[in-house]
Length: 205
Image (tube, rainbow, N blue to C red):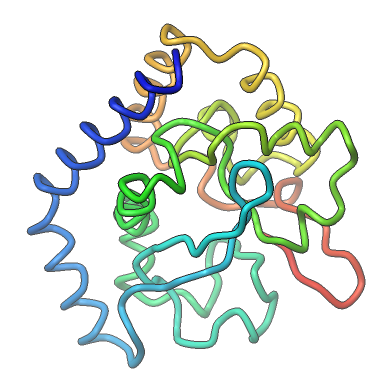
């Protein structure tokens, strides 16, 4: 898919989905505020295309300041920092709907490698930096092939494969698999083998 066509696709899809889901987002914001203190929208610095930083937007699913508690950025099933509302938002992926604002701003795409935190990118090999050749996506090839349950190096390899083989047909397949994944909720948490191994004095996603 050419870059202008992909951008048109991104804008049309993100604007349409935001319009349709705006009542759901409003209800989610109210539920978050009623259950716990803190702003309902969570911002986190991520690395985008060509290593440009940006703030990804999500609905807050954990208690305020969770990144400084316990396992830091690593989250697993049953994490005590996840609120009751947050658990539902994660299970349904409603928490990621604000990512669509990032898409409208041109910082993300509908499909591409998930954006990662700077400390992860700093440890990429030259080959792994190829993951930054495309805009990060809301969903992607690694997302529909195991998501957070995959070991981090395997997730990177899947993303690199997508960068090298991206086509309209593959994007349609990813959208279909994403819809199926949203129904089953598979791969939400890292489990025993997934996630990113933290370097000393830092935490992973």
